[in-house]
Length: 265
Ligand SMILES: Nc1ncnc2c1ncn2[C@@H]1O[C@H](COP(=O)(O)OP(=O)(O)OP(=O)(O)O)[C@@H](O)[C@H]1O
Image (cartoon, rainbow, N blue to C red):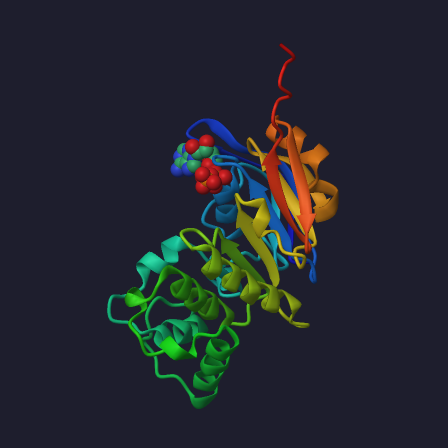
């Protein structure tokens, strides 16, 4: 079991931002966390990473229970977390390869000498993600798509059991987005790879590899289970409170808002 939340609620500034969340993530499944702005996605990730604690309910992440065997630092070293805020923290002089290697130490910046095995692993990850051409470039001079791949590479260095990708395609053009998604799909297909938790506002980023979906609405679970059972016109029309059409092509959905019928004159 990767993750287990039982009736978890969280208050912020006197208001419930997450309410009664029950959710299990098993090894071998890849999840999409799908919700509108303000639905509580970031708060949920903060709970999983132990930056926030639940006001009510219990959380177990990778076999560790909050408040018991729980050591936040030890837990975080087993979770690969990719978000735009991590990119902003990378030091000004670090090159892409150093950023990837720093993932072996769960640090921002490389403060320790690396051994040949770690160096080789970094090169293999760069190759797998198609980043070798810019490995020696300063991280901050890379395009957004290149930076995201490097941050994913950094997250993979520690062989995480859970890889959380928080809106990784923000700011990417169509081609960069599709290339990034192809890399994510390859990671999802690794036989001994991490469970992936992919957070997005965009249904068209739901890959065939993401077999499970959690729909979050106003801090509550609207639906949870097999992606095909949730990402369809009927369920999503209820989710949005708006008539939408979900159309699946090549294993990926697109959503369109249904137009009101023109009233007869
Ligand atoms: N530090 C905070 N203090 C008080 N309320 C907060 C805090 N952070 C978030 N919230 C509130 O909690 C609710 C959920 O916010 P959260 O950022 O978790 O949603 P989200 O789904 O990640 O949104 P987005 O997609 O826009 O990033 C929002 O109503 C937000 O205003």
